[in-house]
Structures are given as structure tokens and as C-alpha cells.
Image (cartoon, rainbow, N blue to C red; front, side):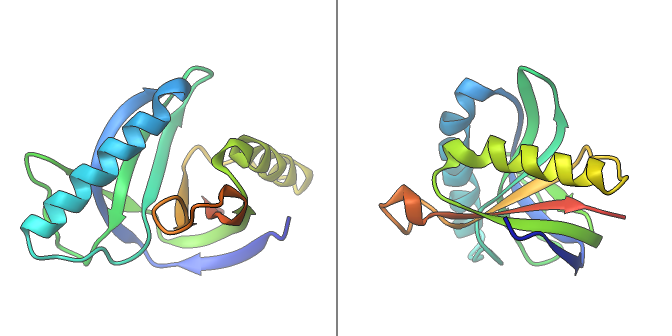
Length: 151
């Protein structure tokens, strides 16, 4: 796992926001991406990057997650979608290679890295689905960038 420190500008996203149980994430993501994509198409807009999920609260059983797409600044929410902001500033990032089933392990390795480096694991994290089922049939070729604010 190659951890990279970076710097990001804040990025607006639009999508669906819900508190979701782990066993319902797949269905939620499919619905969220479809709804966000349709809302952008209705406005004549294209996403400004790959699909993304912003996690702002996690418990043992569920996550507060906004899933959708990055958009140009000022893309207002609608009845279908909400707006959220990916935080700007210093980041710690890693690209997970493989199916989504392996993501909890990669998050665990990052949490251990934060602790080993005397840092508190942030409560906000986002995933960017750089290569996924919408563009690649083989899950072993999927790439998910995991981004934690580090500021």
C-alpha cells in the first residue's frame, strides 16, 4: 500500500445523502449514482470527476454517506439531490486495487498508519471510484482512491 500525502482544493459534490447499513451500501450506491447522474443530465451538466462517496459519520452498523459526483462550483441541489463539500487542505491518500470487498482492510491499514504516526484517524473520509463496474468488468482491475483529510 503506497500512502501519498497531498493537498486538495475543496470540491462540491451532488448526490444522495442517507444513513446506510453495510449490507445496504450496494443498493444505495446504485440508486445514488443513477439519481445524481439523471439530475446532472437534466441540467445539461457533466460530472467534474469520477463517482465519489463522502462518509461523515460512522458507527459499527451504519454510515452517514453522500454518494454522487463532483460538480463545478455552484451546481445547486434539487428535489432529487443534495450538495456536499469534499474538504480542502492536506490529505493522506491511497489507491485500493481490487474489489470493493477489500476496502475495509485498506481503511484499517490507513487507520493503523495514522495511529503509528501519532495522528488521530479523521472522522471524515471519501472514496473516489476511479475504475469500477461502470467501466471495467473485472473487479481485480478496479481502483478506488481513499482520501482522508490530514489537517
